[in-house]
Length: 110
Image (cartoon, rainbow, N blue to C red; front, side, top):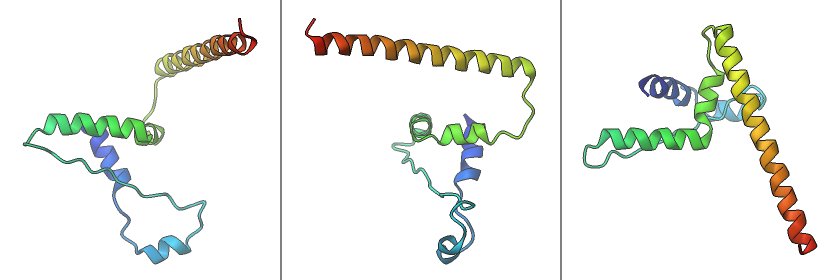
């Protein structure tokens, strides 16, 4: 969790240049800067971190951080990730087929 927070903080830090420069730069090269703010209530840091992690997952920031990985990934890890992605894709396709069959039956009045 701490490593995700550190990497997220570096990705989400505000640029040092002014907003005029942001408007004048090439839109293909500029990154959108956005931040996440989490309030710590009653000194409960664990709960605030858990909430921040959920917000990061739902907004896609965690995926951006993982895509920015600069360290080497072992071939065995690549195989595991590829297998998981394939399983996820197959589950999604199977769900889509089931949903389509249910919708067709509903439309036909069966």
